[in-house]
Amino acid sequence: MAAKITRQPKKIALIGAPSSAAAFLGGCEKAPAALRAAGLVQRLQDAGYEVIDHGDCAVRHFADDDENRRARNLKEIVAGLNDLKLRAEIAVKSGALVLVLGGDCAQVIGLLTGARRYYKRISLLWFDRDADLNTPATTPSGRIDGMVVAHIIGKGAPELVRFWGEPPLVREPDVTLFGLERVDPPEQEFLDKSPMRRVSAEVVQAKGAGEAAKTTLMQMHADARQAILHLDTDVIAQEEFPAVNVPGPGGLAFADVRSALIEFVKNPNLLGMDVAQYNPDKDSDGSGAKKLVDVLVEALTARLRALAESETMTTGTDAASPAASSAMATHDETSPVSQAPDESGQENSSSDGPSSEEESSSGMSAHETNA
Image (cartoon, rainbow, N blue to C red; front, side, top):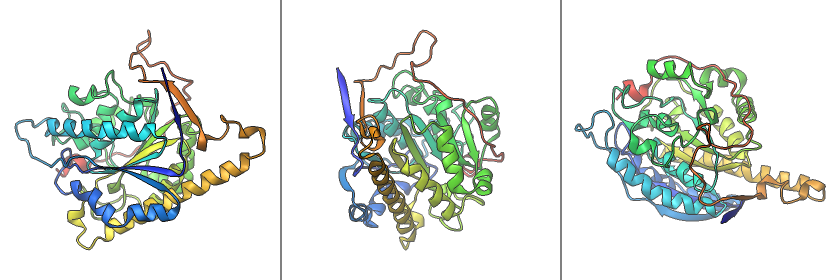
């Protein structure tokens, strides 16, 4: 039995994931409410979107959980992901662009799992200054937020590694780390041997954020593969956006983050994105929420314009066939997607281009060392 998903370019499916269970301190569980209060829904509607609000998952709170020092608060994290996964499955099937308001970084696992229910292979664009590649064996903090990418690619606590089913949730060659700046020694050792693409903050600044984003999309084969975008707001320089769980020196200028985000969100094959780590407890006047809403609305408005231009260009030509306009593409997959590997142990997939790498930066990850 097949599930046909017709993409709805003018619809956004909004989900709140109010969790700080995986985080380094409490507060980010309040982010969905703060972003809603800052006018996000109305602003998106004013921009031309129909917003389908799937509500908020149950609140999951930060806890020290000293009984499980290598993987803290794991049961609460898994409970939250089960809640989000169900909402994400419904949202993805609707064909709308899914926007998850977090919350901690672990919430992206729920979004990815919901998407994998219908799409056999997905790329992950990790827009974050941290690699988040520690595991329970290497972490000095035990906080899952410093280990999310590791679990997505199949390394770490079994409860998360097998949350989807047969790991990995996303294959290493299909993960791109963008804006990377803080890397722990065990993470760097892993990256030195990994086919994961990475684009350091230094490369983004040197090349120009917009151009770096366009190059990244090309290397990801974004024109041919569905993708999920994760935005960790601590990628922004703390001087311009201090309301995050783990601030630190460096980071990208807000203008650079805006330029790159616009290019990423314009990608017609983007299935959804999550926004993580904004902490209202560190934003007493609400200015951080307003800035974040401004940049999200700006990027999503640019997406609408780009999709409209693409549709106009293909109208009246041979490219106007149903397969030509990716903005209105119908996706037909086996439902549910098979989780079984092929005989070689890898997922059956379409052609996989080269996994060329950009420069990566060294240095300690504040996600771990500042805990």
